[in-house]
Length: 123
Length: 232
Image 1 (tube, rainbow over the protein chains, first blue to last red):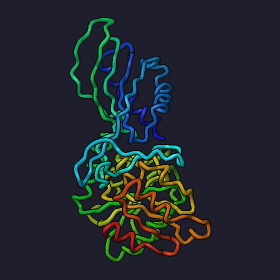
Image 2 (cartoon, rainbow over the protein chains, first blue to last red; image 1 turned 135 degrees about the vertical axis):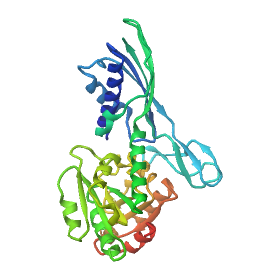
Image 3 (cartoon, rainbow over the protein chains, first blue to last red; image 1 turned 90 degrees about the horizontal axis):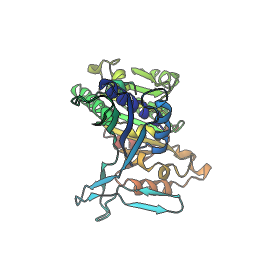
Image 4 (cartoon, rainbow over the protein chains, first blue to last red; image 1 turned 180 degrees about the horizontal axis):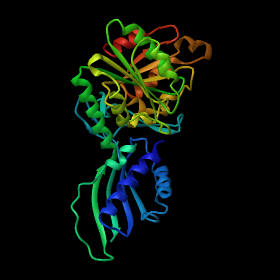
């Protein structure tokens, strides 16, 4: 939903950094998007392309690495992936905050990041 | 999300020759900026001993009405302030200001959620010395606010049982970022054939830690339970 503003933040950051280094062009931008965030990589890409037009980012490659979610069990200390129920009824995998080992309650420890990892520039 | 321009990478500059291609590590977490501002809001509120509760829910789920009920119930014991987020209009905060509490309306213009930066600005409008409790009503949206903690001590998701029976399973991530879920308009459940047991089971499945409160902001039912769930 807020992909456009997220992409705006990203483009502003990259442009500022590229200009600081007197780059002629930005060739590639690598970002990490957490699977437990509400950012959709496809929509992010779409917004990025629109925002890149007419800037030194135009035609650059946006590499999106999706970060898997992880939870920590508050009871047994399990750390790892979330159990997902593939319920045909809902047509989607629903992630649960329940420990896959002891069924205890769990909290999210990874999967919400939106990080600009690196950029490749031509100077 | 105007704070974007303030984000600056702290990376050393390595001089490169003309036409050279350079890889630059930035490692800037754009979400973290909001987290940091949210933490700053939390610290500010705590320095004045103010407890804050953030309410999210779809348009028409009854957030304003529930906050109004809580204000009426808690006003004799707490000095309360309210921040309301909407794209435009001051309708909600006009309503709540009639209860005699200080209110600040934040109009986001285009944004679908409040962020910690907007809340920080709204906090400047209050005399925090004269508050014990702050309610924050987020923009009517059950998706985006989940990605943006504001610094509140508790988060509440308000679901109208009159709406879709799939609200919870369709938005699992939202219900994993809140502490309390309110099933509102419970007085209308029978009339619309809403399966409350099913909604409760969905909530427990998605996030077993969640406290569930069945309420009707129209009749006032469940407001006491909500107060308990919020430890107020």
